[in-house]
Image 1 (tube, rainbow, N blue to C red):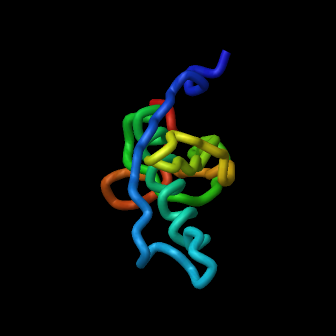
Image 2 (cartoon, rainbow, N blue to C red; image 1 turned 30 degrees about the vertical axis):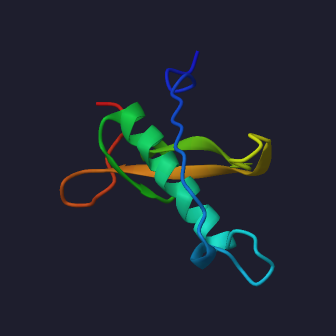
Length: 101
């Protein structure tokens, strides 16, 4: 059993007009930013170390992230996108370090 499988992080964030593109939907880069931040929280909780988004063998772990949209007036929710984000544990000097000591 993977010890990191049960770590779940949820965050609610409003999407304002400045976060939307010309079609009125969330900018893709903003969506990735939101997913990256939540994924980093999961990764840091898993390895209890600072992490950065990247990919380097035994110093890395993958966080599965879902981004949901909700209409506040109705409560209707829909899955907007999913992603697999890879984070690397880093030491105080910013160098990759094993996720487990």
